[in-house]
Length: 232
Image (cartoon, rainbow, N blue to C red; front, side):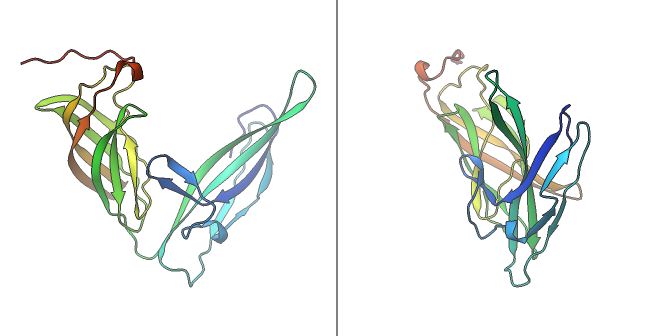
């Protein structure tokens, strides 16, 4: 951890179990069978960092021998507490925290990804892809995609890797269309591309090709310009 400010910073380090849920992504849990926190040791738990200096926290994981094979997860937070003086003379505490996810696997485990389909997120007004992981290990797939309407390529894009934990699925927003782009005409589209995950020595790739229906978006729910209809 590095203190890039010009004041002394106090930091507290702690761990919590987590998952990635289908709709909202990262989520802290109270209890879960995949909780790694009880098998984590780290020191120091509280530290002071001078301006411009860095400190290291040592993490050790020791799984109990009788634990079943599986993946165990925790997010390690470092939380800073800085006092800020208000104009009336009272002090207020501002808490900022940064988390790093930590995974430990027991046994010979691997992910197994599949694309379950695509849909239009009515709240975000963007296309989303549903990815399923029926394996026993987390994967972080990146997504290369192409959207077509008939034979016409509407848009291509690339999405940075995101985590899909074992025995779960998760929606990935493709960040299209953005607020600065025209609303998609309603109708049937084709979304294709591939998922890629793994390290440089062991990269996995999964092609996909799914249909998606774009609904009619009323002007009151979206103020972006609508493109002209291509009449043939």
